[in-house]
Amino acid sequence: MTKLNKGEWGEPYVALRLAGDGRLYISDENGNKIPDEWMNVLEVIRRETAERTVTYGRDPETTMVTVKVNGDECMLLPASDFLVAANTLAADIGSGKGSSFDVSESVQKFLSIAEFLHMKAKSKDKSDIYLTTLDPRTSIQRQEIGFSVKTKFGQNPTLFNTARASAVRYRLPSFDRARMEKVNGIVNDKGHAAVMDRCEEILAGGCSPVYDGYALARRVGCEVFKDNLDLIDPRLPIVIERLLWNHFFGAQTSVDLPVIVQQVVEQNPCDIARPEVKYPYMVKAFLYAAYCGMTASTFWDGRAEVNGGFITVDENGQVLAHYAPESEAFKGYLYNNCYLEFPSTGKDHGDYAYVYEVDGDFYFNLNFQIRYR
Image (cartoon, rainbow, N blue to C red):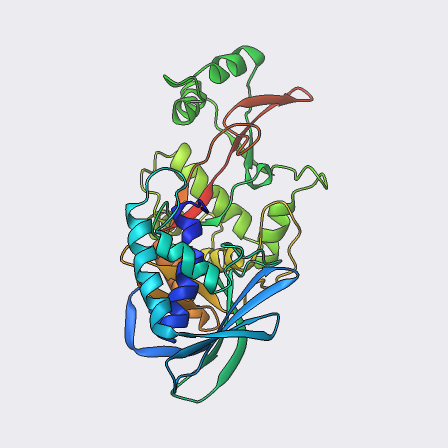
């Protein structure tokens, strides 16, 4: 029996649900279903490997689904069978225990019949599933739109993953090795770095950390993340730095982006006109870039790796499309639902929150990742 975690089971669930329903509803910027806006799903396409593509053809005029592997028709299955399997799978995911688990024998059997050889498609880009759709209002057909699947069955999905290169670097004036050892010795009851306590100790000693750029990406030895942010907007490196400063050194307790961006608006570190418009606009552009495939460690050219958007699955199994081409609503959805999270400080992950010395100067890094609800 195949064992997956809740998020991983979400991908076959979406394929089953869409093949069975033949309809994908659109979300508004707050993540709510728009009852009178949907796309008819003509094909659900799963690129399981480079050598294997499985397509589920859905004719709106019939109740049957045509299953093809690499373009060759294998069978016809009732759409209702897909819905039964989707409903059972949703219940199994909801009751699943442990980090990974198997599902009902009936679901496993149907997945095998319906040519689900690999539960998680191994796409070369960020798309998990592809759809051919028909807009019933305009009769416009779009071929093989790529969507990234995000489920709320388990942990909140990650939009921007942390990396060593996403860390903001601060220089610590008037620091010395004794103070470095004192700060680095502050740990919590589990022996891990007590990040907030370390930040308080730096400030309590009279030091005012000075923004000094971003950590170097190890493969290329330069500030890749800063360069990517500069491509989006030359002021973004300062904006991201302020978000972290306000949390760690300024004791901003909220991690919700609209709240912490509002503080940046009030501070206006870039000294710009109409800050209430421009700072949210910049952060929305950053979130959209992260969705499009921008990372901290690889130079980005501004091109999107997903041409459709998100498909989200809520706790009740409702499937909605957050359609990227309608970008303002999509960006608004990201902005309203994203929040900062602070990952492990270990050197194999976030690699931050300890004082280090370079050529007689002392530095301290802060890092982050972004999830959405």
